[in-house]
Every structure is written in structure tokens, then in C-alpha cells.
Figure (tube, one colour):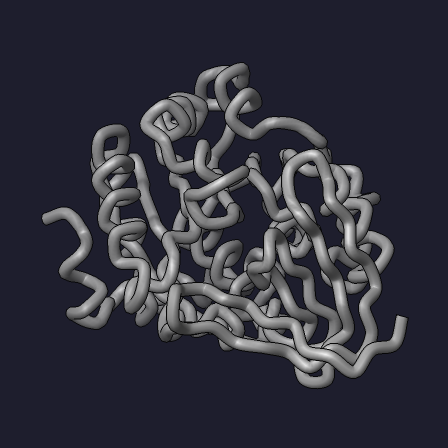
Length: 288
């Protein structure tokens, strides 16, 4: 349906952004959330969940690359990867770019997100849905990690909405306790922790929760244009020390072995290392 209207995203009581809509492609009320996909004048196709931008064709590479390549290359030998959320398939595609990955399980609670992404945003996931190493499950991530065997995965990537509504349960003590249990001895987990310029409580409270179950907790940053408010933080928690301080030279060698060197638009070995050196206004919200 062609339009000449604007979609407004109100992120905070007195701040937001808006997009000129060229064409609305889908508007669905699922069992969990309101889903809108439209073609914008500036960012290609855009998906909103409950009125909040989740992904745009133009800048999705920033978030997806940093959410995926940083933990897998920091680990260095992650073969079994669990993805919670990420129903658009972008994280799954980038996980499968790593030659050493033998299993990638994606658990998305809302099957409508997957269906609509396949129909209207097919380039985001590419061929990931049919890769023999991939398993896409429509189900509850909380229930999945509760039932998964001990040490079943080397890395967990959580691509969730903010800790309200359907995403709230992915920020609880129970969830992090089970994540720690199902990770192998050198395992790690990453999850989005909001834009600390406006959502400092999210980073602080989530970090404190992760600290109860992981001995090494921190965060790194990515500058995603449509996640307004400056740097977005990605929470990082590991069972072993030093995974957030791997030198760029080592990361470069691992990326070359994994087959991703030269394939990215935002991630670089130097940017990987630098992303953990947080500005003071962000670092002060991490537990000492």
C-alpha cells in the first residue's frame, strides 16, 4: 500500500525519531506483539515491534556484525552457538559465516517475526534458513535454556527487545543462571543492554545480574544509527578471564581462519579490541 506518511518512534517521553514511509508492507498483531514492516525513504525496509525499530536494511550490518563476530572471535573456538531471539535471521547468517561453527540453534518466541522477515526482508538471513548446521525453533527461549543439557553450547547470543513486554524474561536471574549452566567451561554470553546515554539503568542492572553467575562481566559498544542516543552497549559475560581483552592481531588471525576477514562493513579486528574500551560515562555503570 503506497503512502505519503510518517512513522514516529517514541523512545523516551520527550525524544524519538521518525521515518518517511514510501510503502507499508505488513501490519500484524501476533500473539506477542504488534509487528510493522514498511519501506522507508532513507533506510530501506524497516521492522518495528510494538512501535520500536528493530532492524533496517541500511544499517543492520552494524548491530548484527558486532553482536555475532565479537563473541565468537573473542572465544576463539566456539562450535556450538545458541541464539535467543533474532527472528529476522541476520545473526544466524553471520554465525554460520564462521567455518568452525558446527551447530547454530535459534529460538524465537514469535513465529510471525520469522515469517514476515522471510517474506519482506529475505536478504537479512540469506541462505541461513536452509543451512544444514542451523536449527530454527519457534518457542520460548526461557524454556529452552531451562531444558538444555549442561555445557551444551560454547556461546549464547541474545538478540532481544528491551526488558519490557515479551523481552523482560530474558533479563532475569533465572535466565542467566541457566545460561551459565548450559555454557561450556570457556563459554560466554552477549546481549543488548540498551543505549546508556538514556538507558543507564538497563546496563547497570543487567550487569549486576550477570555478575551473580559469571565471574567476568563487562560490555562493549557499537554505533547503530537507528538506535538513537549514542553508543549501544552489548553486555559481555564469560566464564574465563581475558576474553574481552584479546589483542587485535590475535583477533585478525582468528577471523582469517574463520573465513570472515574482509567480509564485514563495520567490524574490524582493531574495532573489535577498541569496542571494549568504554567511554567513562558508560564504564561507570558497570560493577567494579
